Length: 508
Ligand code: XMP
Image 1 (tube, protein in one colour):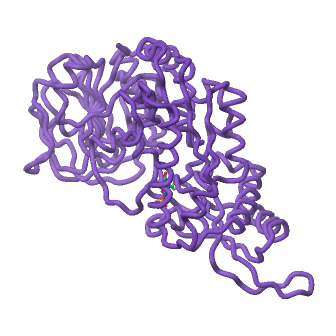
Image 2: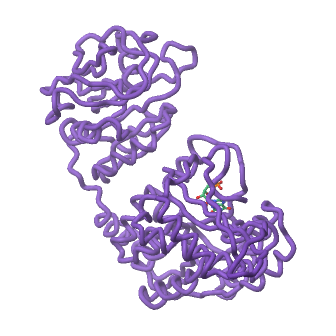
């Protein structure tokens, strides 16, 4: 079993970020609820644990706690923020209210501590807390302070217990990644074995042993998760069939690209179903966004079902589930704003014996690195998020082939110019929307009465919140000029400057 670190969740907003940083340091970790801590220790034999921050106050009734014996197992622990107070409070230290700190602070650290090895004596850290360690537990020393926090880091090196009041996982802590690596390598003895090339080797071998020459089916959507999952399985088995349902709502050139990459380059057995007309017929006259989503979701499943029936019973169905999905379903629930369509309903209509989810343990950035490792092209691996219902929710109001064509052309120009400006890696998602507004314009000496195209570009980490991207005006100028000149029936371009919340990223 790979060396594992447990990232123990106490409800902190940065919990996934901590886990991603650990993985970035080439150490495998799992994010688990604090309620499962003993069970997971027994199951995974971790080389170390990181306790995350959390919204609770240690002294409050009902605040998450752990049994003190967890700290006496000899397993190194790094507590962050609440996790640090938890260590102190669980032992014979004390946690009190204030002094509260929020934002950047200067950290004065004892650089002889294993945690701060190689760091300057003073550096910047990021604080976000209202409680603090009032009394350091017996056997512990203070290894860092800030002007207002007397115990910004505490440790008992003999017991390998460490705590930091600040957040080493966020970028604002300038040496945070080094601190985490010092803990992982210097304290836990990690060997850095978690790499994507190692993952390919291990997973392909496991899949080979499991699947053998049995029949496997996969739904390929063109998105990065299903693409990487299918390619990985393809390496391990000869009897994989991929079904790609082209609902006619993809961006310019996308369907052709899927066929070229997976059938021609990767040599997969790919069934490409051209179902555009079918979807457009069902969507005729429909303008309500949730209705569009529902129709597309159901139709997608129906088309897939028909194709799958032709193949007959299969042994395995591949799904591109990734780790954040697993975490999300295990740790919390949130309100539904839009009914997101993905391939979630497929298991109900396919005759299969078992699911294969080869990306279940990977974060999105790891899936992308894996995609490159498997030789997939950048256009697929770095593909920006794209909604399952596709352009149907970017044509506002009812959908026609003509509107889709206008949108495709405008969107293509937008994407091309963002790439030309070198902004494509910086902006999280950028796309055109065809509004159902028509306005008066003048072209040559002629009056025009044509569509308005909306441009949306956002920066985000996970799509949950987003800010509008500050695209330089000269780039916007080029985009706007090209769209009104090159795309028929468009005479106006507007830029969406709303953040999420209160808006959403997509317009529908
Ligand atoms: P919103 O518009 O809710 O979008 O702010 C957040 C992220 O989700 C994508 N999105 C979807 N993805 N099916 C999907 O698979 C959908 O129906 C859907 N609607 C929105 C959106 O592009 C953004 O990345």
